[in-house]
Image 1 (cartoon, rainbow, N blue to C red):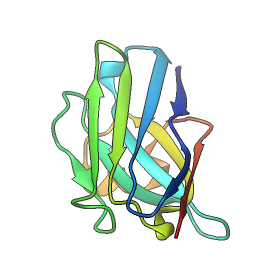
Image 2 (cartoon, helix red, strand yellow; image 1 turned 90 degrees about the vertical axis):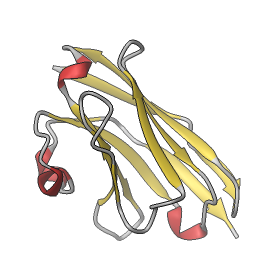
Image 3 (cartoon, helix red, strand yellow; image 1 turned 120 degrees about the vertical axis):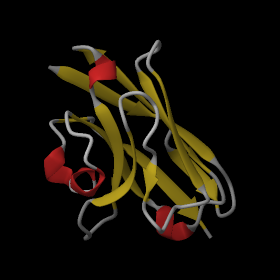
Image 4 (cartoon, rainbow, N blue to C red; image 1 turned 30 degrees about the vertical axis):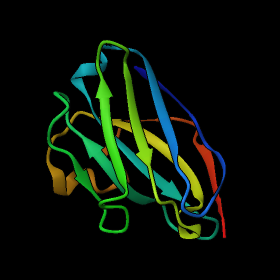
Length: 126
């Protein structure tokens, strides 16, 4: 069992930055690939980024590429999502999730993930 807790969300103006954290407890965190997803009201949950167990194999959705950076610190059992140049369309609840797979095409689907956090709200004002 892995427990995930997101933090760092909030209200920011367009062009601003936020850093989200995903803190894990439970089974060995370094055994899991971690992904970030987001869900806006009335929309499906959308893939944002993923990072493999070792910290390599970074992958981003086209909508955030060049603006968001994912990283992990296995010693602290934490994954980060640095979000820069935020846009109003980035407004959503952001979730982190843990998966046993490392196949990138699979990791873009919510169904690939076994454990989820409760989410943190990010609101970007124009």
